[in-house]
Amino acid sequence: MRITANTAPTRIGIGSKMADDKPQTDSDNDGLPDWWELQHALDPNDATGDNGAFGDPDFDGQTNAVEHIAGTDPKTDTAKALPISGAIALAALALAFLAYAAITDRRRNRAK
Image (cartoon, rainbow, N blue to C red; front, top):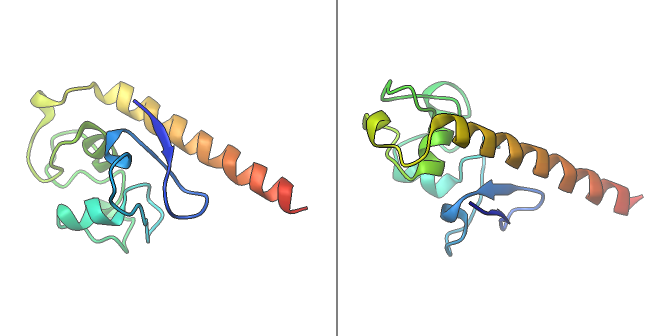
C-alpha cells in the first residue's frame, strides 16, 4: 500500500488507485475521488449517506472507503471476496487522514 499526493492541493489518497493517471479531484472532500464515485454511480458532490466514504449502498458491511481501497464495487456485495480485511482498510484510511492533517499543517506553517 502506498500513500501518494494527488493533483488537488492538500489532498491525499491511499492505494494503487491513486497511482494511475486519473485526476484525483474530490469535490465533496469525502476522501473518494470523483472519477471513482462517478464510475460507481455515486454522487461526487454529496459526502452523506450511501454517497459518502462511510456509505454502504450494497449492505455488505464494507464502507465505500474500504471498497475503494480494496478495488471492489460498492454496489455489489463483495464482503466475502475482499482482498484485504476491513480492519486493515480502516487503519489505512485513518493513516491517510493523519497524513492529510500533517501536510496541511506544514503548508500552513510555511505560509506564515
